[in-house]
Amino acid sequence: MLTTVFAFTVRHRRLILSISLVLAVVLAWGRRLSDWLDLILLIATFLAGVLAFSLAVLAYRRLRPAALLVEPEVRAFATEPSASQIYLAVGFTFLASQFLGTGQMDGVGLFNLVPFLLLVSAGLQVAGGWRGVSVELRPDGVGQRGFAGSLMVPWEALAPGRPSRPTVNAATLALTYARPELVRRHGILPLGRRLRVDNVHPWFIADTIRHYVDHPQHRAAIGEPAEYQRLLHALTSPPTGPGQGHDS
Image (cartoon, rainbow, N blue to C red; front, side, top):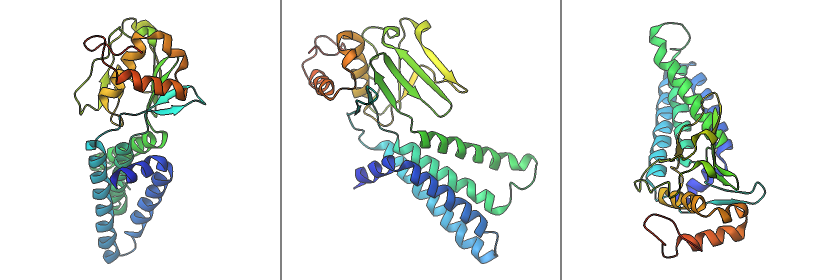
């Protein structure tokens, strides 16, 4: 049941984020109409935020899929966008709307700093959820895009036999560079050495990246359905060495 809900959320994330923004504004505006309506809508806003944050926790703690999306049109294997990030964006949106509804952000002063920072946080979360941060494996390297920056790591920049498997519940995957000068970063807030992997099994994505680091002959076929099937078979075959991936 929850898996279906998470998949629906990812698939329709922009519609969900748009609806949550509209509802947050309507609830904030409605609270200014009367005292009794203020109380009712305050409770409704609070419950909506609690529900969103609860779903974010459940999405984060779920058994993450050991799978990638096959995107032959862009020649890539990619992780799906994070359901947890989308729920966080919705939760922060409703949380910020509580301050909008009380009028605490109408003036200027020290006491308005927290509501302002909360509103900024909500905007950042919504921007990230709208774009959908995912890891992409392409013939030329590994990439990840955030709402304000991107990271592109050519295969040649990665150290052989890496990355190692992180902890099973890791939210990020650290990359080890052999040639860091080849790494490209762009944007206002460029990403660092860690990939966000809270939407895929961390061992699976680590094994997949390491496989292509150590088997350059297969990189050109990345993005093709047949190559994805070969990859899955290679990753489930007996390893050729400790932590070194698999041959095919």
